[in-house]
Length: 259
Length: 141
Image (tube, rainbow over all chains, first blue to last red; front, side):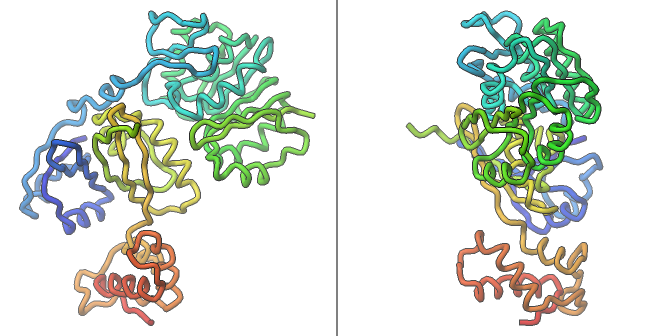
């Protein structure tokens, strides 16, 4: 795949690209000329030429995009007690640390939804079995393990994410985490605690299977504050009561306890 | 203190379907934005927006944190969807490719209203009708 850059906006050209299912990105940064970027597997040289547009092209792997964003990640606190960082060496100020190799799997620790879920999870893990549904980087599974869970199951339908999850589980030395690629239907074990930090449209779909497992606690995160009320009235929580909520930025997480 | 703005990216992304592959990953990654965090936030914000392509304005701050605003889909896309066609007429003056009823124009105008300069629905409908005609679509107003 190639990255094409050009400097003069051209709506007809953009429409021609749109018909090829390609969209143009406008990139305007301080002290830099505004640039228009398009990514394509097929060679766009001829179409650029037919519109008389000057451009530059580069192999996408030479742009460094997969590494560049990692430079700006800052370690911090996932909860009041659990620190997150991105290597094996950084000392944990509290003794409890979650170490994540940043990748294209969700969950580096910096996001509000991860922090809300971790805060709701940490106090109910001790001695329990925990399942992390849609685990991404496995950050919540590792948090559960670090906070005293006896057994942890971590899975995600995204196989690329699972590659990163396995790396992170190993980096943290969590021998009690079992991880595999799959959805909620692939969980064949009982779990005392089920945690899912996804988005509400997905949480609604998996909710039936989550309650069918009859966990003692359910932790849901990835809920925008504005959709919280609707989400809670849409899902069947008749056997559960809201035990705690966490609000971080525009997001909300909830912990349910079986009655 | 307000955070310093570093720059902006304008993208067009299918509602609820942001993922780290190109174009999103490379465009954001090179600017230091946490790719997966943006994908999650965008997908949460647009999960109920149907199968439109959503224009997004992403503002990036000095610490590489970001905010974004989702716009309504381009009016041409709404017209195409309403008429269930894939592209406009290659000769809009001569070859007409469909006809929008007043109700359809109104529906599109209501959808676009947040992004139009006018808040008057009749005015908005005129703008939609103009776009439709320039694509070779007849309009019943």
